[in-house]
Length: 249
Image 1 (cartoon, one colour):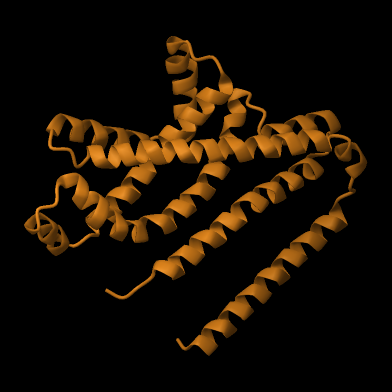
Image 2: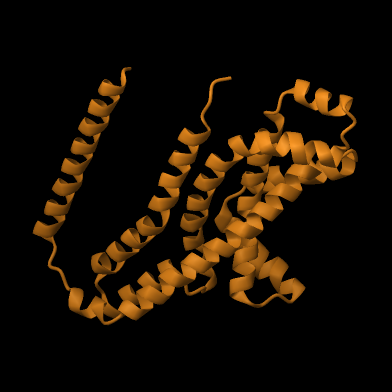
């Protein structure tokens, strides 16, 4: 497909999407009597919840990268027991829903460990969940480095650490950054499940406003647009990184 055809196809897709969205909005406007005055009184609740979601997601992203990097390196460790533990962590976390993990890890594990701060526990659990996916991204990035490069590094006498620092990491980062940016958007959306732990993030704020005003649509529309304001820039960054690091092999 030529660049001209790509532009035309993108324009048509955008026009169709805009038309469908406009039609849905008009249909909602016709069947709904808006009651924004009551919801507007709780704007501070929305704002505080949105800010909480922002910093919770940022903290979870940093921790999940640390968890993911540790698990990815552990899967390449020379000791079989460490490799099995890392593989078990990745498969267990990726094979079970986040909701189930939140309930078990908070109400059972965290309670037994004496961790009663809901924010700290929620961030750690979210990081553990996301870290398993990031571990696979990092592992795939490391394995994308050709064996010839590793053999060349060994031939010139580089240590294992030097090989990772000067040979593996600069090449692997090309493959890791785009999906990592996409995972950041997933963390923002997954943070909405922290509302079941009573954490005052954005989703819980919308639920509280809905309970106080009985204006369901007016309470959840700001929720949708608030999450979109957080995830859209991250998604655009992921696409930009994909274009930036795309190259022919």
